[in-house]
Length: 236
Image (spheres, helix red, strand yellow):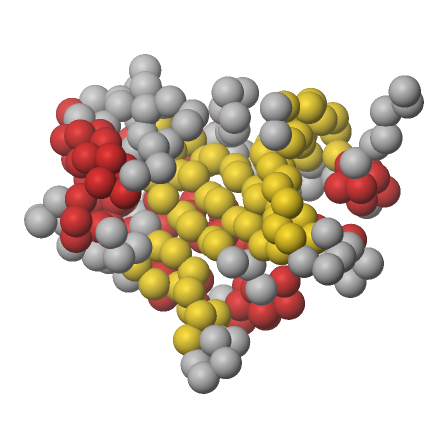
């Protein structure tokens, strides 16, 4: 049986964005170029519908401080940056007005954890970003710091809160995780939706990088300038 190359691979290759890819259990690990990240996981699942639509999910990770670099000062930086976490929601009568808000679950993780709208404000004021979101209408855009051990997060919300609280008390690294998913309607501008998704991820990474400079100690700014690419763990 011959192997049929996925459509997303053809789309990225035709645009010169694809360096390589690897099949994983439920999708693909994509190695890309010309973005402010170099790897993305694409997970596909069946979304139902008359046209057998698929749900495309994309995950990339931006590691700022590795486990080896982590120290007491940087653990405090993690705790401050945790307040920046945000998600996308929709408002308005027809739910057609995309807006980023601070992650509601933050207050449940720790009573002293207050929200910081610096990232939310930057995202909402990015007209091009919001315009791209209006085009593809993702059901999920989530920007969080890594706070769970292992690659399979628990399904129960109470367990998620418990694990995030434990990680917050003793963080082992500083890594942003960006997730985006939407129902993809084949034949309805599929190629453009994929390309717009990568543009959205790219713009979010740029905002994260710029904001991170404001939180890191001055001696880490040069480190950030050298490490200007997103690193995605092979385990995804």
